[in-house]
Amino acid sequence: MLALVTGASSGIGLQYATQLARDYHCDLLLVSNQQKELDEVAADLAEKYGVKTIAHFADLSLNDAAENLYAWCKENNLQVDILINNAGVFFFNDYCSTDIRRIELMLQLHVMTVAKLTRLFAADMKERRNGYILNMSSMSAWMAMPGIQTYNASKAFIYNFSKSLWYELKPYNVHITVMAPGAVDTGLFGLAPNLRKLAVALTVSIPPEKLVKRALKKMFKGKKADTPGVINWLSTPLLKHTPDWLLLFAQKKLTPFMH
Image 1: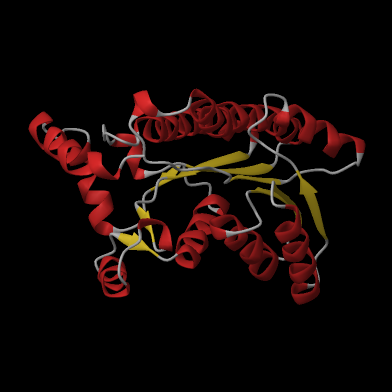
Image 2 (image 1 turned 90 degrees about the vertical axis):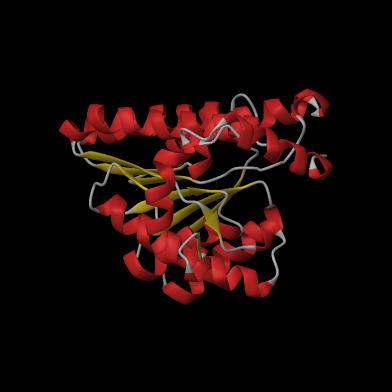
């Protein structure tokens, strides 16, 4: 099988590429806008696990990125059996101070490119009556949180979009799964090592290796959606009904950290 992984040169995307090669013996089409890192990852995974790897540089935030990537696959006779829509960006900003181009980039990458890549490759999978798609959402999809208003809205789109498509594609043996993790144990939040360990122990945060292992198992089982961590899963209904006073308090405390 050939797996297409976006954002594959680092972070969670690199974990998807590594585990698909190591544990499932998949050939890989790795897509990223980091050419040097992408080439190194492709060469390393091919050498370690004996799979075929293709490094394809692309800026998936461009308007026609999905169409160009799909056309390139067709031109090179590449049949994508697994699509991992992982590429994404994050920023914590006061909305009215955010450059419109940054807002456009996030929405294009998280919404339009994901929707179009899914549309193009899912149609082929549907015709073949076989295929897997995994989309990355977030627990923030249920949060009306100041500072991440564009991020959480885009993740809400991914979540509902994917769950709706699960019903459409299931009769054709095409499995689409959406993951909605809470915090992932990386350096993104700048927490001290002891706090990161505590968050992992409480299952509030999850190591990227564990997240990806779980996500791939859910995808191959045809699971519709998943939120890792018992505390995260239990707190999801509460996030939908967070009182205004608490969000206003959070905004007051967080405003100094907004760029």
